[in-house]
Amino acid sequence: MSYDEPLFFQVMAYADEADRDVVDMVSGNPDWEPPEPLREGLREFADAPVEQYQYPPSEGLAALREEIAARRGVDVERVVVTNGAGEANYLAMACGLEAHPGNEVILTDPVYPYYSGRTEMLGADARFVPVDDDGRLDPADVREAAGDDTALIVACSPNNPTGAVYGEEVKRELAAVAEANDALFVSDEVYDHFDFSGRFFSALGCDSPNVAVTNAFSKSMAVTGLRVGYAVLPERLVGPARTRHMLVNVAGAAPSQHAVLNALRETPPDYYERNREMLCDRVDAFTDALDEAGADYITPEGAFYVLARFDDYPGTLDNVERLIDEAGVAGMPGEAFGTAYDDWIRFALVTPRAVAAAERLAEYFR
Ligand SMILES: Cc1ncc(COP(=O)(O)O)c(C=O)c1O
Image 1 (cartoon, rainbow, N blue to C red):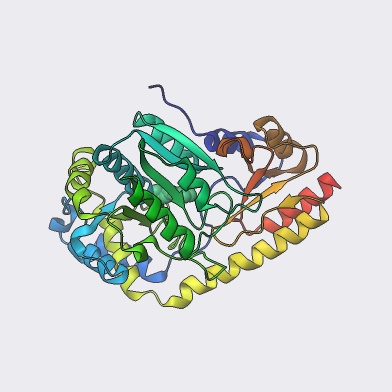
Image 2 (image 1 turned 90 degrees about the vertical axis):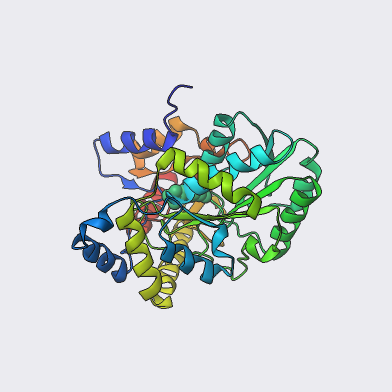
């Protein structure tokens, strides 16, 4: 298997090399501050005795797993601390494929591209279920697509790239479809703190043996570089996931886990509220400017992306590069996320210049 460089690296490199000022709305790297206790935790770790610089437990620091388990209302044995939601998704998918009959993975279209890439890497077959025009997933479509060969259903809510939030009914139905087909529903909840709709429902609430929930502190604490996430797995998958995690990584990074633990314990809820409100304001301002540009868009119910479509300007890589050169705004081509939204361009609102970018777009398309 050759190294398949994700498209967003290519777009970011193109934007970096442009001869003009470009507002980068490509990646999902938050531009706001982590919680102060997280920085304190890192500082504290720097002066820790040498023993703490050695291998932490492979499955994660005990105190961190306990803190996560208490917050999520699950048995601590089900929690495996991972290198971000990325590894949590990998473990859930790989172990789920091994444990369940069939070789098919149901994904949405548009899809977070790492799910489809991982499906291919694991030698499974992806089956895509298109979402509606407003980004919503109809679980009846998933039920219709699922069958004996379905081993996994993988979905994220709040969704990247559509911003849709799949509420309780949808999550319960996806869990039920997984149960009916002896499959595993992998519910990626990495954007759970960025729910603007009030409808977010964790799949843990389904209390189903056919559900694995994945999450991370990457986005909620604005630390994509620290690499701390976790999977809450059904009991039968815990052993295989711990083994796979250990054989690939030995263990996660001790300083990152220490800092996240301190932040979990010490961060007041208003840290998360402030960031959510700031993002809501950005969404409003950005979509107002998109109205001026005459663009179609999906108003996100959560996460921090806006999918937009401009008249006669499909979201191909060529057009995205043209937008960088001619408008000074870099987004992600819709074609990176599948076929259902390949006319669209995704803009990540993780820059204080989101409004300036939207004004540039309005001027360019006017
Ligand atoms: C839906 C989704 N899942 C997982 C990830 C990866 O998260 P992490 O950085 O914690 O590995 C991302 C990152 O953008 C994402 O959008």
